[in-house]
Length: 244
Image (cartoon, rainbow, N blue to C red; front, side, top):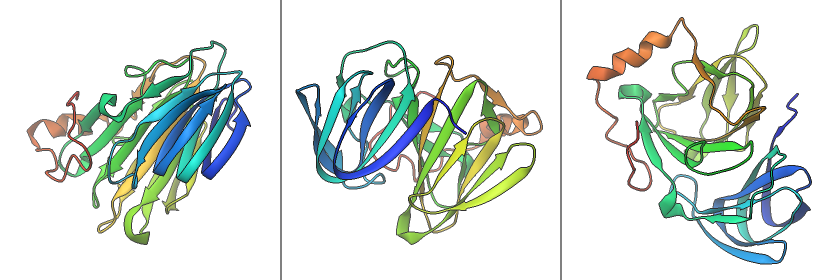
């Protein structure tokens, strides 16, 4: 069971108190006005997760949040202790990274990565994988972090997620599905041919660090990318700032 990392998906309207959690309001489809302790933020949003990088807003612990709009909105959150101000994150400021190579090429929107946006504990990024490619690869773990994957797939399709927690599991996922990863190695996330894959990756733990460890049986895969080209279908949305 996850203890500090949370994710809700809401439609159109919602109101809540953050309590001991820091929360991000992230449009998946549509736009909205977010009011945090009486301060208004307009989120322009996007048509879908496959059409554009989106703007977002951060709500601190101990605040009251109201959402008024039309669409679907992700609320990634994490238990926190430090209180930061409510802040707007413009879409144009989100670092977009192309990662991997060949059929392990993917796009990462680092809207709330450790390096890009200050939070107390919450880490959140979006990953877009062209159909037929693998992401979250090679398999890896994030020590001392809980993790949530929320999936969307084009065209009513499906994808697969591998998880290792004492035994290997392969789960078929469709739009709206999520997988909670309290510990252990995971990956790859596999986009079936014909269906592009999106997932929202939410993490939190005792420290706000990636604590990234490759599965030693498969770490060699990274070296194989040196002589492979990036998939020409990338970026799938806005032009990237290439960071890796």
